[in-house]
Length: 234
Image (tube, rainbow, N blue to C red; front, side, top):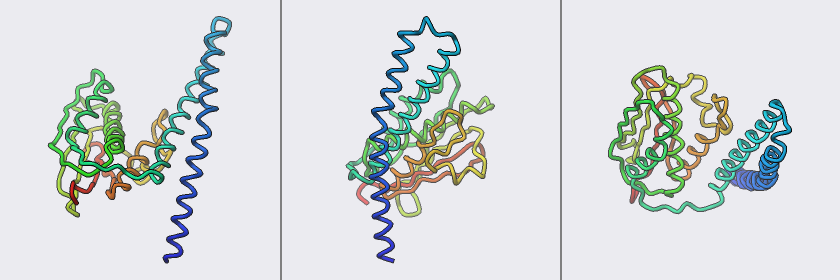
């Protein structure tokens, strides 16, 4: 069993190194594609017909999407390469800052925000911000496709079964099909036409790197994310 565990750890490290290397090497050519497509559009824009301009737009949009995927892969691979810099993090302040950052994405839609006073946890503040940015943004996107006039986003807390902090993020959106519940945390799985399917995978990896758990359930309406984290000093 120990030998098998050691083999798996070695394979995981090799996979992380390979992912990092490939993703890093893709950054330069992707920048070139985006830059030259933009330059071509600028220099030859008046000579191109509508169909040609559409082709260039697709090239630029696809290159930028791939660049975002590469950045996400780099973030994912770095989790196993760089030690966490844990400090006491006030989740109430962190979540409220994330909401302010994302509030413009709500647009003119009326949303009822219900935010508990959240606990303090030991965490890497940059990575933990990324977790809640991904989860709250996912909830906002779900609310945007809700047909209901009442749109609610709740962030609540209780004490988890291990004495850790259990934070839930619930929305009143349309929810997720039962068949997709287990897949939604897999890298590159998405039900959105313009989605990358990396946000939830990265969020789970970050939470697990902190010794916690991240999972989702279906609520009365919409989806509920559960984030279990160790409390400060535990």
